[in-house]
Amino acid sequence: MSGARVKTFLDLVKFEHTVFALPFAYAGMLLASMQVNGTGWPGWHVLVWVTVAMAAARTAAMGANRVIDRFIDARNPRTAGREVPSGKVSPAQAWALVVVSLVVLVVAAAQLNPLCLALLPLAVVFLIGYPYTKRFTWLCHAWLGVTDGAAAAGGWIAVTGEFAPPAWALWAVVIFWMIGLDVIYATMDRDFDVANGIKSIPARFGIPRALRIAAASHALTFALLLLVGVLTGASVWYYLAALVMGGILLFEHRIVNPKDLARVNVAFFDANMWLALTMLAGVVVDVAWRTLT
Image 1 (tube, rainbow, N blue to C red):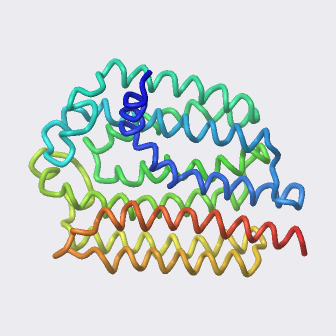
Image 2 (image 1 turned 120 degrees about the horizontal axis):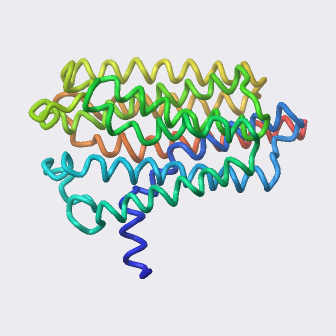
């Protein structure tokens, strides 16, 4: 396969957006390791297979999303140029990518522990089901949050083989973070969604109320970040990172308002990329500090 073709498939699944959930998976993994062995290091086996599982899960989810939504995307001027509706990737090729990714995900889960493998069927339902939810409910953003939030909890489970209060709290952090950022992103398509019967919070409540809902979701995200610190016995370094993350969330809501949506992409991608990386950096410094001291 040529380099150009590889790039087409990477663009299809927006591979660069993996940076959203992967740092939270790593954070869950490192915090769980701190609880289990006091070092924060899960070992290369867990690190490699968590990475593989995350990449495979996200590729499967995005590939399915693109092919299931291809007719909707073709009608939307903002998305008509995407790889499947534009013909750069056929539906059959996209589905083949999804199937291969799911096979890789099964292998990765089996390499981790029995609970990861047992939870896999439910995870696949959420991964593949998201594009259908926007046809039926404006709570589609919550479905996406639950799906992506499983990455953070999955990092914990990969190490411990069980749920624990910090895992639930990490899951909740990502749920409400994703709800807020997906609602902001959906404001760009509000008029199209209303005209085509697509369900979303902006389509249901209007852009001003939608942005207030997103802000409330992100306020809860910040509170849950602090709860994770309490539950894991985090050091001051974690809380400093949490404050930076709170500042990033505040920045998102300062640059997007009902009368000016021009910077939605900045709020959606740039700001949230830095938020996820700040989370990972804060956890790395936190567990290193606690290990050394």
